[in-house]
Length: 208
Image 1: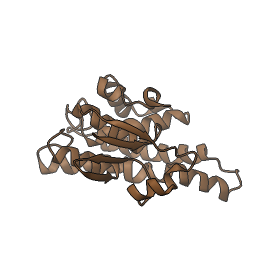
Image 2 (image 1 turned 90 degrees about the horizontal axis):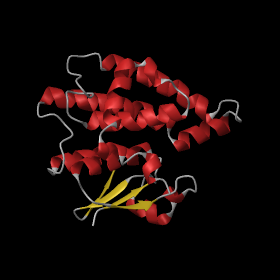
Image 3 (image 1 turned 90 degrees about the vertical axis):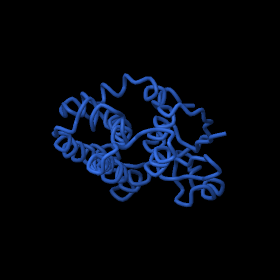
């Protein structure tokens, strides 16, 4: 049995759900409610010492960090999320990291809540997200201005970069950002959302 410990609205968990679906793997989900603080409970910390989601139990392993999990699925032959050439892999990782390491971490739940506490609510969590998501997507739009961009972020196959982009756009739209101001990103995400395996992983499809 493959078991995914996730939260329905977590960007990181969303990435892994899409990857598992693309691999055609059947898995069960165990909810970790971030709003109630379940990520800091002893059972989740035993699986994931960072107190985060997702955690994937697979092949007798307990895997954490969404990008590492997706690369494990790639490396173990279950899916294909990186190009075969070194230059292509470097580009895909750069695009993925621009989202997963630059935008997402400073917009996650714990950071947003901390900012709101520090400012006494004068700077809201939504204000914070809009600022950093706007800045990050503007840079990503320029990075996608490349002959290597195809139907998706890199060529015509879904890669690690696309799995990072889709949840980030979901978050951008939740805080009222107009993604159509980034035409390359908007076009790619429209294409990605039409893929059944990705659509099935959408938070609205898995929420409690």
